[in-house]
Amino acid sequence: MKKIVVVILNWNGGDVTRRCLESLRQSDCVDIQCLVVDNGSTDGSIEAIAGAFPDVEILRNASNLGFAAASNQGAKWGLDRGADYILMLNNDTRVDPAMISNMIACATEHGGRAAVIPKIYWESDPTRLWFTVGRVSLWTGIFSNIAYNRVDDGSFDSCGEAEYASGCCILMPREIARKVGGFDPEYFAYVEDIDWSLRCRGAGFSLILCPTAKLWHAVSHTQNRQPARVRYLITRNHLWTVRRHANFVQLVCCVLLVPLRTAWRIAKIAAGGQWACVAGELKGVRDGLLGRLPKGDFTISSATE
Image (cartoon, rainbow, N blue to C red):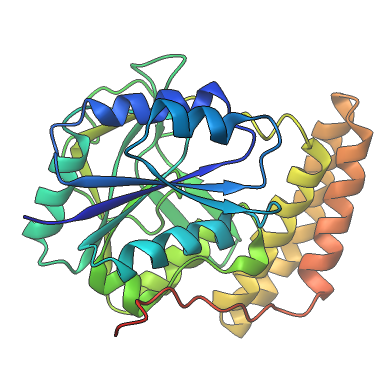
């Protein structure tokens, strides 16, 4: 039997993480171990999780290390304990009982050479898609979520290859987790999943949609707490990713489009009166274009290998 470690991050998540864990209890895949990595919560949520789910392992960080670094902690914990698969899962999700077993079957069909992603729906509208497969253009710097907000009309009912996966839910076979490594911790949060996806494909692996695997996503409740910080990270990390993966000609083409894209975003943000987010956008462009490209440690391999 295959061993699956499900890595869930919690940061003052309260009821959100508990709802996710409750849905995992209904999974028809029995050989799973849930691990919650807590990023310095102060709301008592981790104590509540420990009390309600005594079978769930918990790693506690003294402070918020960010999504990327904490996810890597969880993946390494799983590999050190012999996991055959690492499932990265956002805490603001609800899984279908058959999701994990269907994803494992898909990964097996591809000989462990593919990371697998599910159909992700909006929790607020269970018939409408939030993510299936992502597309990347390093010429324009556009990362497209082609199914976003579409009613599920069957268009994505066949296995398809993605150019990037959403970090909301990714099943990584052991070999991929070891050879590709984890998310770049320098990203802290946002866009690290696209960078990881491009590194994964660059290492010769695939990203495959499993259409029979289903997940409902409440969409991050943390974004509303620090909107200017979120705007900064998304813009900065977007440009970092282009710099890291584009060739010279692609980079030049993308940079030429930055002023137009920035002006459009600022106009949209300003129309909503979010002036702090305007500053976040401008700082993100500055640091994304001029900042030194980070060289984070992606390693999450088991210490025994």
